[in-house]
Image (cartoon, rainbow, N blue to C red; front, side, top):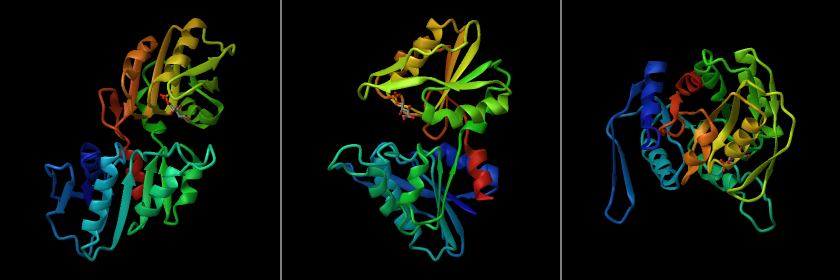
Length: 281
Ligand code: R5P
């Protein structure tokens, strides 16, 4: 199996190659003075199963993905498996207002061209798969997060809203502790209110899990609420750490913040390579 890592997912592609005993392909990538990108495959891929790994965030990484797909399809390969660790735009998976684009659907149409299997990680909502006509597998970063937190004495796992309860449940069952969810109300893109809910966290080490931390508004509101309720410690964990602008500053009430390598950042402690490898096998 040949593995190609785009510039958004270089380390993860390397780890994946080690995990599946695949070969990392030599490639070239550069950016022209006008900002346009250039990609080139430097090995023959004829007759191979090829795995392309590239997170589609920020936007220039989307264009780069399309160019890798095009370059790989120049060869007579067996299959192209596209791994998108963080599928950007997965939160715009329906029309919330008349006239809006369903952004992830628009992306899906192009991504699936020349793709034989798509693997994503915590693709926000189960709805996303309906936009892809190609075989689609969504794996979760939660088992790897739970494994990392095994020795951290977590006593309760919370989802910031009811829609994310399955993630809290997954981690809680691996850690052998209870789980619950908070009542979240989004006021705008930056502001989130966690409605008063009596949660028995007094003196406990609580973990909040979410798929994405973007502005940090959700986790900040949840952590503030839990500390007000007497939590001894609050740990926040997410699969995709976008941490836009001053998100990490907003999370100062958290005693620890961790994320996976779907988006490499300073809080990355966990790799999803093992979960992707399981899907590949
Ligand atoms: C929303 O449904 C997601 O699961 C996350 O809770 C959300 O994207 C987090 O965004 P922010 O960090 O900006 O509150």
